[in-house]
Length: 229
Image (cartoon, rainbow, N blue to C red):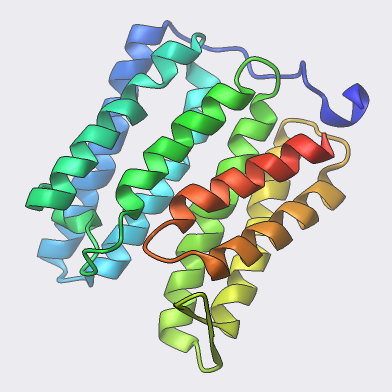
């Protein structure tokens, strides 16, 4: 129902698109620079710096919704980073965001997912655009951190090993981050929508090998939001 989705209460862009593109590049490269500084200066583990970049890039969904007017201008930065991340995957261009597991293509999949959900929701519901990326941004990032450090109860599905502790973290953070996005945009039915999205995102994350969760979690989140809307 239209009243439940609050489709029209979108933030008004506050600047022109070329400047927004410039700011988006500065933002992403700043995140990469900070991550590389942490890796080199503080000798932090690659998994930590990867998740730092992961969260920072995912949170740019908010900046995209706030700053851009035209969707085709908004996809310029993630589209270029599909290419740059592919080069980095092959040649180690941005070490701070690369996985030691070369079968993990998550850094390439995430900007692709960003583009897809942007094109899907931009014209009519920016709330769902931002919300669909939040389970991947916060839930998946902290699920990996908590699961690796505190996971004691392991399980294996479709060739992927997960922990109960990590999956519970995924569920909780996905719910909180999705709910926050929907609340900020004034979506009335935020509670049941956030719960369903979190449950589905947690399930698909547990089943996704080879970094495919970076593509499938936003996809299933977008699908859930579409159906619930």
